[in-house]
Amino acid sequence: MTDANDVQGEIDMLRQDAWQWVLRITSGDATKADIAALERWCAQSPRHAEAYAQASGRWRLLGPAIDNAMRGAANAAIRHRSPPIGRRAVLGGVLAASAAASAAFVVNHPPLGLWPSLTELAADYRTAPGQQRRLALADDVSVEMNTRTSLNVRPVANEGDRIELIAGEASVTTRSKAIEVMAGDGQASASTGRFNIRCDGPVVRVTCLDGLVEVSRQRRSITVRANQQASYSSGGFEPLLTVDAAAVTGWRRGDLFFRDEPLALVIDEINRYRVGRIILLNNDLGQRRFTARFKLDRLDVAVAQLQATFGARVTSLPGGIVVIS
Figure (cartoon, rainbow, N blue to C red):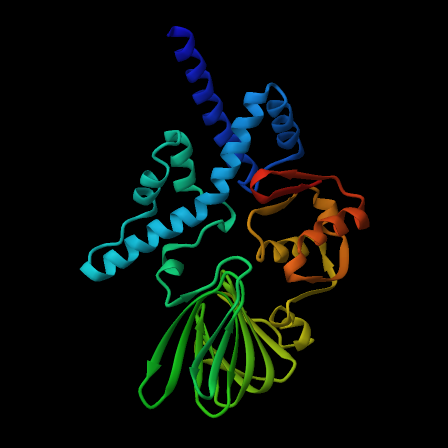
C-alpha cells in the first residue's frame, strides 16, 4: 500500500511540475535555456514525458473551458444585476483538479491572450481564433468580422447604427445609412462606403476601402479617402498613410500578405489565426525582413517556410506550441 501511495505521490508531483513547465513556456518570457531544460526534464523518464503531454493537452482545452464558464457567469450577472464573477472564482472551479500554485499563476497572469477577457465574452458577437463571421445589420449595412474579434451593436434612433469594436478587426460596408464604429477612445463613421477597422489594444487603425470615412478622436477629426489609413492611440493621431487596401483586407479572401515586414511582426500576425502559440526566441531573427503570402487554412506551411528561409531551429511541443530559435 505504501508503494502505491509513493507512486501516486510521484505522479502528482510530476503533474504539478509539468504544469509549471507549460506555464513557463507560454509566459512570453521563455528562453533557449528554458526550452533545453524542458527537453531534459521530459527525457528523464516516460512518466515525465507523459505528464508534460497531459498538461499541454489540458492547457489547449483550458481556453474553451474558461470561455464557457465565464460566459455563464457574465450572463448570470446580467440577469441578476449583480457584480460579475471574477476570473479567479471561475478558474477555481475549472482548475479544481490542478495544483493550487498553477491555478493562482493562471489567474494572475493570463498568458498571451489565450482566452478572451470578460468584456469580450459578454459582447453581442465574437469570433474564435481562425473564425470569421458576417453580420447583416440592415439591407444596406453589413459587417465582416475577422478572427478574435468582439463587438457590440447598438441601434440609434433616426441616426443609423453604432458599433463598439471591443477588440479585433472588422470590415464595414454601408450604402446609404449612417454607421459609426467606436474603438479605443475614438470612432470612425461613414454614410456611403467601405472601411476596415482594427483595434490592437490601445492602437486603432482605420483603412478606407471606398468612399470617405470620418475618423474622430477628442475633438479632432480627419477625412480618410480610398487607400488611406488613419491610426490613433492615447498619444493621438499618427500621420495619414497610403496603403494597399487589398493587402489590408486579404483576410476576407483567406490570404495573409507580408511585404518586407519584420519576422517578429509576421509571427504575431500568424498567431492571431491559430490555436496555441508560435514563440520566437531569437531577437536578431525577429528583425529580419520577410515577404510572403499564406493561406489562412494552411498556416502550418508558414512554419516550414520560415524554417527553410531562415534556417531557424523549430521545436514543436504539445498544445499547438511551436518554438523558433
